[in-house]
Image (cartoon, rainbow, N blue to C red; front, top):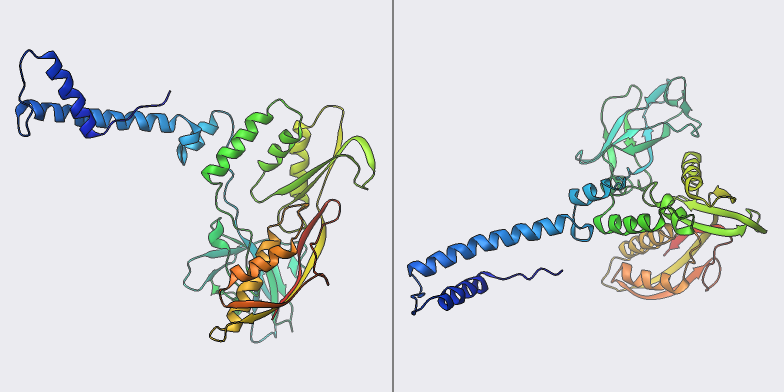
Length: 374
């Protein structure tokens, strides 16, 4: 039932009409009279009670709850908000005199200029310079620099920093003089928003006790933010018909999800899959998008600044494409004009050597290859 709210004037008018209707003679309800002051005081109390009722209704329904109230509502159903994701990437530790060996240990902190955001060195066993025995990245004699994996100390989008912004060593490292990030650090995401939480909660309820594609999708979406996926039914990983088998292709935005992530998805899908079916979980087949653009800019504008804005917009758009999504050729043109007001025309725009949409292969995802803007 919809709550009928009244403002202060309406409350006073209603009270005045009620008391006058019950009286045998005309009452003095002029401004400043005792009776009017009593009615106005009661109206103020009624407004306060009305506000309390609104607050109770807002916090007892997920559709109108916010923040902690959303969390407590979902907790009653064993449903929780997806946490923030820390940005990650690589930084380059360098030195002026590479005469002796040096070690950058795991746990070393670096930060951007002004120390507004810090990052910590983490393990990367795929890096040839990483030594498990020393628990760090080794600079051998004669080697002037080494790349090391880092992750933001504070999760969230604040960790997504531009190239060259990390320049401060948190503490002195013997044999290491400088640090920088040649590439941007990406992947940082804030905690799940209230609208996203509500939308996922609805899918969660709709998927309970159902071995459907919606249930499988809900289980995957609950793992972490930033995942995209496709569910291909009655098909094998080789692309041939296989009844009762489905393939889950999942990506975390990198084009190469980790073994740990794929294992987690495997377990989540297995918990809700239909009985009597088989399935496989895999990373996507990456289709590289090579974009070449020649811009015409206003004579009053800084051409290099427009080039940088356009390149960043194209790369961000391609990085956000989900598994199975087509890269629209005309969408690129729209992005170019939207990225910088200095762009007056596009002299050339070539996508993988042509001028047509780029369609990913089966189980595929499109990721940026070479993006050249001039």
